[in-house]
Image (cartoon, rainbow, N blue to C red; front, side, top):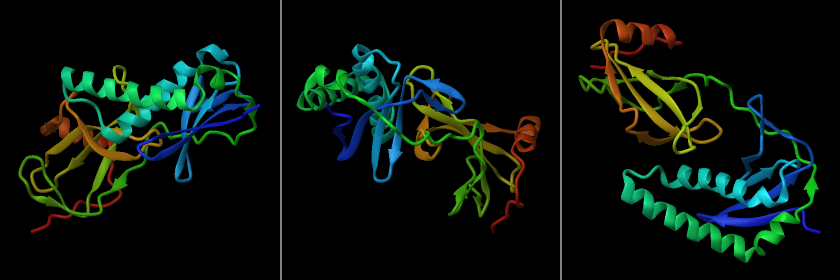
Length: 220
């Protein structure tokens, strides 16, 4: 009996396995979970999940991986094209691996605990100059303030509200960025909610909620 099946998306190897114990991630039980495993990835399935429901959860997690790589579609037509390409690629992979029966017959194996992501990520240093979204003055070596890692209610991808303060004009530029499941930035900026520039009291409130570990430098 098999205890793993290897799929491939974007030349990334993805092993599908059934955990021997319930899956806990960020203090909650999961039916399935996509985890990085070195240079590869792993889709873990809960042992209490009905075998007939495994394919649905596998597709769910593979969709996360797909959008992490290509980003979210910009409009309805792009979404239709993207979903079509995704479904075709995943269907081919599942059929080549033995179809539904192969996944339903997978046997549980012992796995290390899933890696938890902190509810509120720590601040991430900018490694190069970042222009202010309002006055254009370069900010260096400033810091990006991070909000909580969340799951997008519509697209099912991980997102985070982020922002950077300009010491020159006092404004704060904020945006919503798509993140990896581990909380790492992808540089994919979402337009809903749109980026915003905070001034006055709003900017002061943002800075109070995202205290800097060092002063922003006013680069001439």
